Every structure is written in structure tokens, then in C-alpha cells.
Image (cartoon, rainbow, N blue to C red; front, top):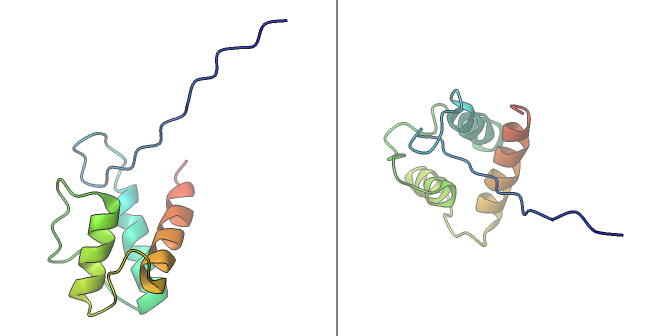
Length: 91
């Protein structure tokens, strides 16, 4: 019996449209996450999105809102979890 070739999955998120177009799913997920967690309206206002990774954007928004941007911290973890949950709704 032969086994089918296993191909690893690659999941990309690109909120600024440099790699793919997502209809604004990433930006919306960020806004919803920050509104829910920290009551922040328009979380991406004044934040550079182009060419940044999602973790860089999380940290930049947290820092701009005087929240702990440490990737091992509770705020960062909470944002990442909410962001992924909201992105999953766009499948």
C-alpha cells in the first residue's frame, strides 16, 4: 500500500495587500480585536501596515496605545488569539 504524498500547508495573512487581496479581513480583524479587548476605535490609525508582519503590527498598535507590546505578554497574546478567531470567520 502506498501513502499519498503529504504536502505541508502554508497559511499567509497579508493585511496590506502586498501578497494577496483579502477584502480587508486582516484590518477588520485587528479593529475588532482591539475594540473588544481595549475599547480602541480605529486601532490602525497612524500605524504603518505596509511591509510589516502581523506580530510587528500588533506590537506597534499596542505601543501606540500605551499597552505592553512584549510578544510574550498577556496583551499581545490576547490580541493574537482574537485576531486569529476573527480571521477564521472570513474563510
